[in-house]
Image 1 (cartoon, rainbow over the protein chains, first blue to last red):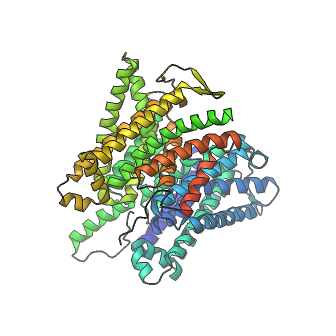
Image 2: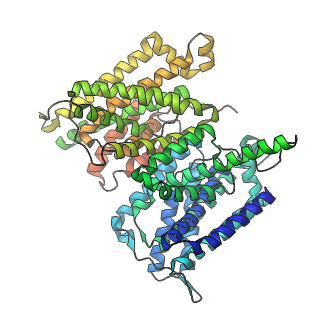
Length: 325
Length: 291
């Protein structure tokens, strides 16, 4: 994983830094969205890919983060503080949702998180004194750091990219720490992890809360990027989308969310010719992928490269063995 | 009091429809561990089959039969063969994802190939009001209740009194043993998919005059089915019926007496409470998990 992972990170970094100089403003907006959604997808990948729990709440956490930043910055607090608050708030809510909810697992958790997302949507829509209801919040300002203004699309993209790089490096570091190894153990074989004395429920909860806070951070950038938020943006559709991103990229692979978010952002643009039909095409592709390669695009690459290396030498390659489910 | 009776009857009618959807949902779960996230869209779609048949000139009763038949082929047989069968070997999670994608697929297809506007849908009986104890009860609510009850009673009779139904129950309870006893379990599993298709088609005919046929109908209906199934107990047909009725009645009463803005929230709060306090559901058995 390490050498291949470092190479992958290097290639992604070069492309991500160079890309905006070749793009029109709308293209820069798209890759900014990509960076923002990737942060949320990394968070969901911790829950889904490592702890193996289907969560349909990630879109709600993005919403909570977005509203937190929008409301706090409009109340005059500095962006950095609001951004930290968005992550912290989502960590706390994730912990308090996960603590009771993770007693039940798998499809039950999917339903609890589904219910949570709908509840958050209802609160955002109905509590007009706080959130301005269905009209949403307009004109969210982009921050300035020590005289460096992020008002231009290009500068804001680099803010998103820098945040993505920092948070994914932190996640990488966490997964390599002894503490994060427990997440990997959860992914590989939860029953074995339990037998070895790991408190699996505690680690699952931790993965869920950290994943939620990444959703909050993502929302904290989403609000100033789009500069307009309303409850509908964070309804169930966004949670479904984030879930599909993680799955399509390859759940349990570190770079899965990067790939999945790229597909989710670019596919609607590429299939523009198909106009309204792109969601139909996307949904059909996901179903085909689930039938033939449930471990996602990176899982497919992994499988192909293993076949190639196996034909080269007899020893099986020891590497990132991701399981798709 | 009069308005309470009105709300109760209309709640029972909605609840009976939820029950139909939830029963199909639990049947799939029991026999094949399929959690159908597209169940709501399965209810949304047959209404469009029927409208399309009526646009082609068929009378309502014929269109309804065509709709049910199409549902059995597409939402029963094709769903089983094309989506579920190739996926079962991968376990529960990929199938969950796949049915989520399927729900998106069906919803967008209905929108793009039929219409994004809500379509009026013919009611079973002409609209009229009956006065009982000062309460005004619509004939439509009564017709919905009658059809739903007859359907459920017929299903219950089939499952518990006929040889075929018992074979299906045996398949659900212990597939290995059922196979040893000579029950063709693959065919039994297929039958549950076909029964589910019939149930959702009937639910579609009952609910569409009330909600209008709209491509987004599945979202709320699917959610209602999950909640009903979980309230009652995932592994019990009786539980799903109970859950559906409770949900329908509570939904109507809470909207009238508590808060209409947060109408959607009450079922969710009940869901969360049930999952945390009694995850096996009101009537459910605790499932032993094999390691």
